[in-house]
Length: 187
Image (cartoon, rainbow, N blue to C red; front, side):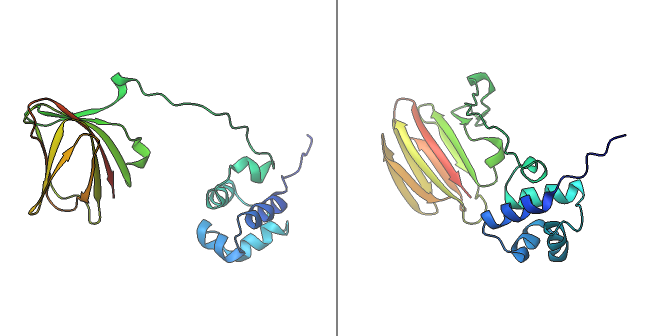
């Protein structure tokens, strides 16, 4: 049985840590691996577990293979497509407003964006979102009326309204024709 030896992670770890501008203390805090263990790994005095290597790669924002093999995986550019049939839609109870969810699911905690389509007279009423949330509404076609806690604004085609969304708010299509808008929610 041949022994290929363990990969020498120490030099790759030290190189990646310094390239990221991190001290041992900073990397220890970011990865959950003790400073003394990091020092031992970098000096080649111990070999880390797979879980430790994974935690270090996550903290350094690199691929695990860069620590184990020293090679960066080839990354090819690609374009991710979502066909219209796979773009989720939400409809208001009366069907007068359709929200097409354009944002990727992995960003839902901090950023959402929607295409809004309003029938004539349609409205979207929203309860308060999380504290500090703001909405950015850009009207593509038509004219919308935004109301929140005593403030009102008519937003025409091409205009953008920015407002706090951590209070109750409503968007109405006040025109006789359908309206479309893009809504970005930042929380």
